[in-house]
Image (cartoon, rainbow, N blue to C red; front, side):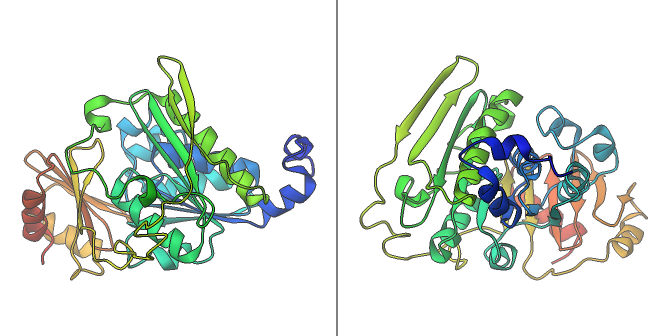
Length: 337
């Protein structure tokens, strides 16, 4: 398909040399929910040569309204998002390398996941992961592109260490738990995802072809048709991250093994003592009491109003509560440790 990228290379900002850079670039997409799935598809179609998609979750019916890579079949089969994304992206562009990784991005694995990345694309749904990405980005000098959306509102900007402010220049710390709306309380419109992703992918392509990042934040309300850009200031003098080189998220000094999942009324639990779970063995044990669904990627069962999904790496997603203590109790009771 020699003409696959012909329209893109006609654009002066890309050209043939820029396309060659894209084809040899490596991007890690952290999170494959709404922003991550739309962004990964655009990047695959643009010809980014090496795409790694990392996600901890599985496809549910409620995802299908806005997460464009997935189908009803994926939801019925309880497919992890990273697995479903890899399959679809390979069918979209067989000339690129695509790798789906079913994992939670933590301070323990981010270096392994992002070591070869030319850029990190933010498709995450929580500030803790974004602050972790930011720590890694600044320490390693790897650019990343932030994106977030809620209701009809969206925001995006690029972080290029030494050139733009980092995330901690703009926000010294994440907002307190429960202090901001989530998709579950405010809802979300699919068009805002595509609008934010357009900005994210444009900045990604711009950086990968060798152009400087825009030093502007895009803010938009897709419902009220309000769009504005805000000029970014210079990196904050005295910033704990990019000035003082303090990386508490990356060093594991800040962060939790339990995370409330955005808009899900669910908690992810990951015990540091549990490194690997044989799902079939666990299914045999739990199957004596519960109706269990199991495949090579995850095991699911229900305890009263709680839907529990367990992954081979020891993680569990407990749906039906945002109480961290209760989630930990359920994990200990049915998984162990």
